[in-house]
Image 1 (cartoon, one colour):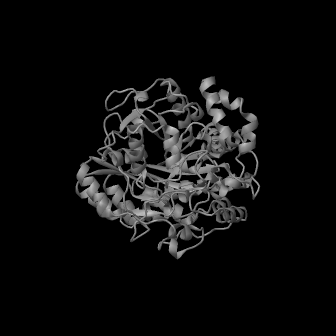
Image 2: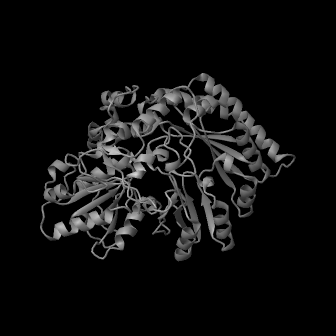
Image 3: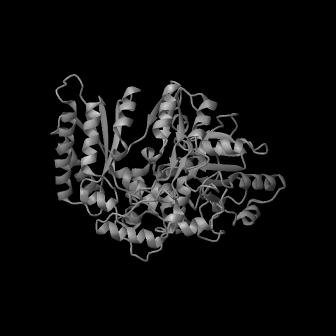
Length: 535
């Protein structure tokens, strides 16, 4: 099996998804799995493990996390002499696509992939690979093999599988809120983007139900790892540093005890972004004691109105208290994340943000007090909203590139007036590209083909303007059938539509309860989980 990892080796070694697959399949004595880092895809890669050519492998499994990975995958197949279109590949190799894209919206890659793995690799992927191994060794033709496995749990074979395909999830039989098999890095090294850090998954999914966040919906039910499981991973690997990965780190009740354990054994660590209401005095004092000097907080919406639409439950006063606490305790860099491009966004929201940024600076200055030697610089990071499939915003239009640039310009005008505040923004073109590739149907694969033929995304997008407008620039009808609904994630369409309508009325909805899906019933996951086999 050739495990195809988009991007170069440095970035690949610092990604978790494919490493779960590698560790899982490497335990199988009948499967030889080798890594191929695709780079930009211009050249046929050779195995990072043996130097073998990729075209020698009957199974090519691509771990696709981002829409921009589509292009290097197509280029790689072409460079290796493998027809990129599945219709032109009657024989092996079989191209299997997994990763978040496979269950967020597989449609744009359906013309390329023979099959998709829908959900978590820990639940059935090894069995699929073993079945294929037997078929290859017995001389079974590819199409006959696909016909035989088309209804296997977790497998979507375009044109053969009856849809919708249920996402497969590893659920602990005793506790559905437990992440029983947390992901962790199997590879580190000087060439990795995080050269000395072992990445460890603290939680999967998020209970807060922010309406823009695909991770909060496609990874339900939200699950936390056991501290003892993470301790075992660290003790086995003995890394000099641990990177904690998760969508809701401060929700994990064992966060501080685990960090204290790491500190006692002199293992360094880093954290992804934190919720302001989870950044307690005790936690921040400890982080400063062990040398953490950069803290990231998510503001998301420019105004309280937009934060209600996003279902971001943030108390502005709690946020300002967190900023003041950071400054008082000697944090020297605060990152504040913001999203622009909401469907309901207007000038009044930017006016409110300008006032709030001034209050953030004032909170920082209060935290500093009379001290002059320490100064906390602030970076406002602004990204463009991409309304994603399987979120309540899947019906919403996406803001145009010109409007997004105008919003960034307004942010620049307000931040340059503030001492010690910098602005970092994304590229609206890239956000729009991501929107097309995440929200399109099979017609979006033509954009990938155009990019390969034209030498890049910008020329291709110019030739795809009519399709882009249809995919991004209109509000979808309430009853419109979406191309991604070939997948069943467990969250009902009715609950997503209800949340979209509540967003338009700027109303909050409670997040997932701590007791798990059985104690809720709000989004349909309780019924879906009841029919999901526990492991």
